[in-house]
Structure formats: C-alpha cells, structure tokens
Length: 309
Image 1 (cartoon, one colour):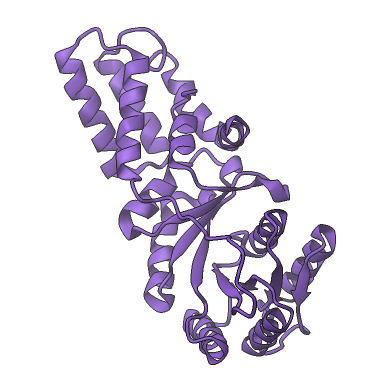
Image 2 (cartoon, one colour):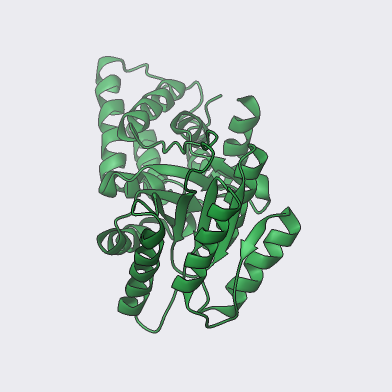
C-alpha cells in the first residue's frame, strides 16, 4: 500500500506543488487566518477543483475556524481531505478480474475517447496490467481511421508481449471488433480490450462508428461491451466534463480513466467530472511506463493532493 501511495504522490506532484507552493504556511503548524484562507481558495481553483468543491472545502474550514481561532494549517488540510472523501464517495471503480469459468464469453472493455487523450496507450497498459494479474487478454485495434493508432497498439503489443487483432488502415473497425471477439472466445481469453476511434470526419460519424462496434459485439454476446470507459486527458481540466457528457449521452459510459495527471497541476479536475456525471473512475494515468496506470483510490488521491502521509 505504501508503494501505491508513493505512486499517487509522485503522480500528483505538480498538483500538490500548485497547492502547497502557495499554502505552505496554511498546511504547516501555524494558525490560519483570513488571508491564508484566500490563498487556499486561489490554490484550489488553480488546481481545477471547481466552484462547488472549493466552496465546500472552504465552508467547513471556516466553520471550524470560527469555533477555534487557533486552528492550524494541518487541521485545515485534514478538514479538506474529509470533504473530498465525502464528495468522492462511490467514485472508485473496481474491475472484477477473477478467473472466468471455462467456456465463458470474454469480458469486453471498450476504450473510448478523443485523439490525444492517451486512449491507445492506456488500452495497452490495461492489457498488461490484467496480464500481470494472471488474466488472459486480447487487444482489438479498432481505431482504423488513424493509421498511427494501429501501429502504436501493435508496437505496445510487441513491447509488452500482448496479443492483438488488427487490420490495415481504413479497415472496417466493427469487422475488426467482431474478429477480435471471435479470437478471444475461441482462445478462451478472459478479456477483450477494444481501442476505438477517437476522430472521424464529424462527431456524428464518430458516434455512429462507436454504436456500430457495439452492435457487432452484441451479435456475439448481447451483454457486450460490458464496460464502456471514457479515457480523458486530465491536463485539460474541467473542459473534459463537456466531452464526457457528449460521449455519455451517445454511448452510455460505465466508467472513466483519467490520464496524464503526472504532467499537470490541474489534478482536481477529476473531482468535477465525478460530481457532474457520477461515473466511477477505474484507473489513473500517473506516468509513461506500463506500471504507471494505477487503480483509482480515493484515500490515496486525497492524501496526495493535501500532502498528507
């Protein structure tokens, strides 16, 4: 658990710095005052926690401050952490990775998101993570509209020794998904991870392409895809909320993966996404290595953000 917390702490280093850099005195042992509360407010907005969450945190700290004028920075940090835990109640997505019964259909995870979100890389990292846990996985290279995506997934598959089903650039993505499901079923694989398109000529075309992949998978298994996860770039902050809404309306998302959090000071954005959509967050991308895709932990996230051990 300690190692996992260190991953979170290191991954959120820029967000922590953005807050702690302005609030060293607040989160230290000195009593807080009105000026330090303003500094904290500025820091929380800067880290993209949003209006609601920032106001919730400040309101509870102010209540405690009125009761105890000697309230210290560490106390304020603990109050903020408590508020965040309450806001994020139910936010942890837990993927069932238990062994599949012999002859069972593969569990299908459709990875959805715009180009640049880290969707293809995340698909490969997730497959590797499941493999490390003893599960068998096939990747489906269904982002056929972008030739580089197919080659990128193949490269990751070679590097991480993963199985991948792919076709040529411009191939019918739904046909690739169908073939990949058949391969996963015939080989007795536990999971099929489908890397879908992130861009087509119009948004409408993209949504229809995703729907077509869903329909084709359901010809094999009416319950597929069992998971429809949106991969969002955490560095774009609260702008990702509208993106998530659009995909959710069109494809009925079941969860989120938030990436690129190690390179941004806006690590509070995932709180706003969860508040707005109430979609569980399954994994966070906290670095470029395969092992840097980590299960989302509310406790570790809150501790990392507020600099608590």
